[in-house]
Length: 282
Image (cartoon, rainbow, N blue to C red):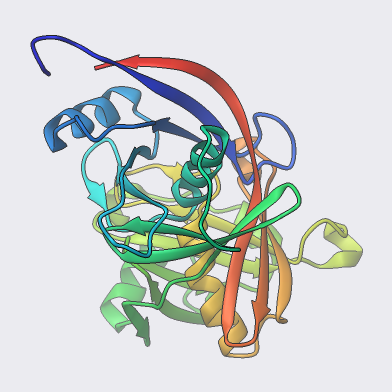
């Protein structure tokens, strides 16, 4: 850290939360241009949240702001809940978009964000890797999730930056019953999805999602995974053009991710609420 610490505006927000404190937390440092990459990485390691972001002046002429996204151990080119949470904080800090949409610059490129009342949505980025999952990877997932080989209905790479691979199961109950062996899953970011049975599961959502990270923990509500899954499920006709995904149930959360296809684009959105405001001294 620098010899003379400085104060930076700071917020911790809850993303994709249908109720207060029931989504995915994110730490956001505002006006972080003076921080070095090592200082950002050290602060993200200290917060120990799944992601911490830093708002910066844009380099791209078309962007409204730039964001760098760090996990406790590495930087990500793109992530979903940090995109929406960072945009919320940028707007709350006085940011004024130049157009009808907000343009975020990140390592993955320019991400378009739109506002719809109290909901923010991002345009799902193109998949960097899609298509068939290799047999050895499927075997690793089956072993790591303690699944019968026939339990997986479909599978697909859905990597838009973080490296997600996803599998589709038959029922929400099967998804909720999973107890992953992270040692076996090591090196993989695995998303699991299954449809809700409205007669049994209720009317609040259409799909249940769980996200198992390569770092050995379950992520509460995951925008990047849901964006990749949406491209896969809608594109293959498994999901309708508009649906709601539930995530975080096993962790005591009540995340809701709203997915909508508009033309050839898929938008992924949810609500964001500020939980902590103050200063980070770095």
